[in-house]
Length: 277
Length: 295
Ligand SMILES: Nc1nc2c(ncn2[C@@H]2O[C@H](COP(=O)(O)OP(=O)(O)OP(=O)(O)O)[C@@H](O)[C@H]2O)c(=O)[nH]1
Ligand SMILES: Nc1nc2c(ncn2[C@@H]2O[C@H](COP(=O)(O)OP(=O)(O)OP(=O)(O)O)[C@@H](O)[C@H]2O)c(=O)[nH]1
Ligand SMILES: [K+]
Ligand SMILES: [Mg+2]
Ligand SMILES: [Mg+2]
Image 1 (tube, rainbow over the protein chains, first blue to last red):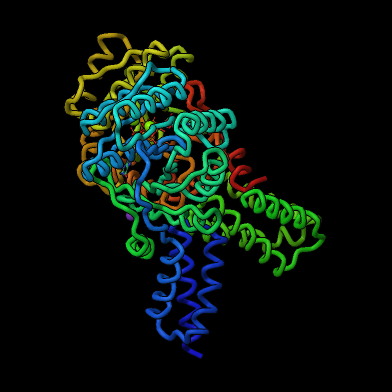
Image 2: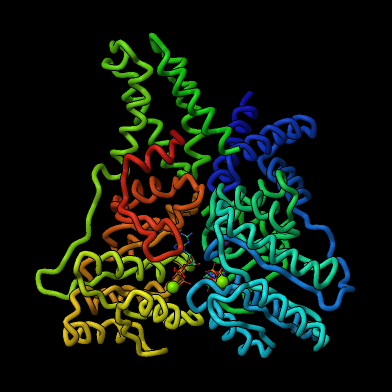
């Protein structure tokens, strides 16, 4: 019938939207197949019906578990990711977010590797008006973390946020360095880090799934900070990451300022994903 | 999953190699798998469409059907077509008749411009050139310091005026280079979004003022589908001369290479293959084609 034809065209259009939004072929095909069945079952007639079914389904999948109340003090946050995704800037955004809730925050400059990484975080600490623990360039990042946690306990701060050097998930030695940092934290404050945030650049394609898979293995990632959503990249790969690895997006970055930050909202994200350019 | 696809594609190719005679049906099946593999490698949707169409056209041609090993012919067509699209032979950098040669680096935030500036300086230094690094990123916290540290580590001077006007800084660097007998200026600019009108306009102004011999668009090798949007906007505003693909030391398939080349027509000139300053390679279209195809 004429209707069926329109539906197939529509499904193809949805396929294009998902793939050009970096959702990935496998996930896209699964979604389309599911949609096809749901459309039949729910007797969807109009394109609007289909879109509605789809957005409801995906938004349910993307929903992060509700925020747990923070009972640990200091609450230790470890921030990790591949090179240049926006870790250091996102830390400034998180610190600003916590400070606005009246909390005090201490930053740990555990990227001792990249040129001027310490200075960069230091400038953010000054702008934020929060404390920073730093060592010399080239120092052992685990030692920085140790000092930062010692200081945090002594000064009774609410949050410690640890900046780490960017590293590709394929570099075995760098990934085990990260696991070591994780163990140092856990040893000094049992149960910490309380949150491990993986920073993913929305511009990244399917490689981000590999990134997530390897970082999860090294440091038990809890959540994703999806950056650079202020561009035209739509970051659809987080759908694949959520489906395959179960890690939810919790925060998004929308610019270079510390205020360009939002808590992740699945509905809004999906509006962006489906907005045709 | 990627490995899975790679091996799937490999078996496609193996099957194709084995075919005594190709039918339109098995050509179509193979093209479907090639399409899928290219999408998984982050080649842009529309670019994939065109690519598959052009391969198909060649594959159903007389030559293939009459050849003794039609399967092998298709594998070759796919690979050759990709090498052709990626730019054929390796491109090089332009140099000025009268020094200094001016090279300007542009791109999105965090793509690897500052690191590549220093890599290129080191690379040219080895070719007996005398580079000058110029700090025209006055926005990112500690960007100038980053370039100074990198410059110092390879003994290359860095021209900076602190937080000033990037257009003036770029312009003043030219006389500084002349005075100090430095023959190649490498200009590091701030990362920016292609849709940030004001920041894009700044690059246009710099270009008008200093007339670079070479503008390189520095792109993250892990970039996905959005590569076509960003590259085409930068190309439209700046008509850049070449592309640098960074972070290729990971396991990204690098489909963005094909997308950017197909959309802008600009050659890829270098790859970044690590965080150290010697981690720079010239771009080889044939190797890149094999990487994207997972062969
Ligand atoms: N447009 C935009 N730019 C961002 C966003 N987040 C970070 N950036 C920019 O991205 C670039 C890299 O950010 P950094 O915070 O230094 O990234 P990083 O992950 O710490 O980098 P490394 O430590 O080198 O691995 C900087 O120019 C930031 O200003 C965002 O949400 N939107
Ligand atoms: N593994 C790897 N890392 C790289 C490569 N090139 C750059 N990086 C890293 O990527 C991150 C970002 O590099 P930068 O040179 O600061 O990027 P940028 O484009 O100048 O960033 P902005 O100035 O903030 O826009 C740093 O951690 C670099 O060490 C590469 O080829 N391989
Ligand atoms: K967007
Ligand atoms: Mg950083
Ligand atoms: Mg830079």
